[in-house]
Image (cartoon, rainbow over all chains, first blue to last red; front, side, top):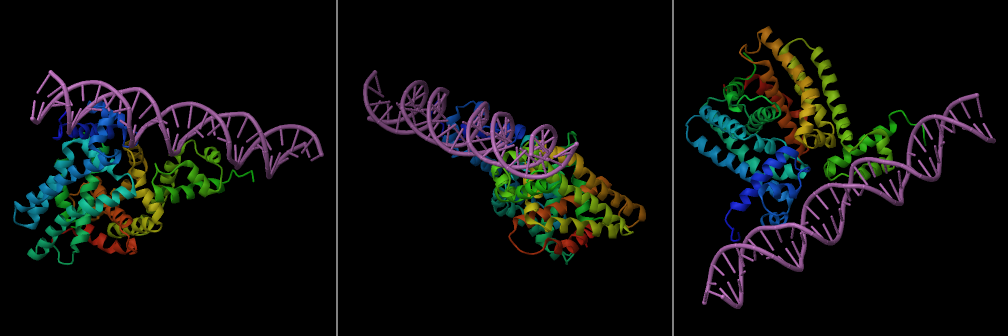
Length: 195
Length: 195
DNA sequence: TAGTATACTGAATAGTCATTCATTTAATCC
DNA sequence: GGATTAAATGAATGACTATTCAGTATACTA
């Protein structure tokens, strides 16, 4: 069965890791459990990953990579800041809501340690926030968003709302689709609480 | 040294746990490390807590208890929904910003496992969200908040913004006080992005 | 002060699991 | 088809640690 330097086996390991980690949590998941589900031997995992934590990193990278790539693409497809915001909200909720196991990883398991969060927020999450803050900058320039907004602050606030909706969806056992909240989120973000 | 059924030793253990867990993360912190810092024997921990996880639970309970108790108190001290919102924002940021180690626990370490998050969000966090959503209900009744708001949704959104500010502060190494963001947060929540 | 109850101690236990590596299996080459 | 390289295996290793509990120390009681 050798000669497998393409991604097949690696993918199988990552897919298995998503399921096991979502189900049992990172620390309760043993390498043997992942190997078993992936249909490989324990040692094989170490041909593709240097250690257990690197599996988690890879999971995060591929998930977050999609957010950034598709986020940029969505933002480029419409003209106004308001429309761009709508696309980001829709995309975020759709991507998270697509796969509950993966959502558990991104909303819960990836936030394990300060060390880990630090690393991921400095890199990929920062890039994602930059996309959002760019939209805010545009909105201010257009004159549709309030000009006293700090774009970096606003981006964090927007992310905060999206992230909370995602986490809430993961924890709730309801079957309601996450993306059904998109309109409410956009309304709230644009208009705030006040009349 | 016996006869210590008051809280002294228990407190010492909890205080030590905050420091060790904030510094090394829950899973990297051994019971022996906590005992050492608290100045007690390993076994003593088990006179006050039935296992390691219960220490984390207790930490959460006492922290969240303060949010709920003081939250109610703050809300009762002012009349309008807008003022109440301001008090909640101020309190939340002040409580989190008061102690960085404790903030690491609440923003990172407590979110370890789905199981754990599930439990805490169903109870204490739910209670906190209820306080916020009551404020929203009042605002709508007063006519100062938009009447198309779903109070439960709005409460989650508000919490999301606060939580993100808190997490961002924990991860940033800046010395800026967290509560200095209160005004920006309230402005954002009340007015949204649009002009 | 002897006796009892309570608090505390820390070495020993009992298990767990990430990681390694000698060996086996499969693919490729000439 | 024999030799060589690449992949994969899985049992063994080694390190780690939550929890227990028999023993010690301290406080209270009468």
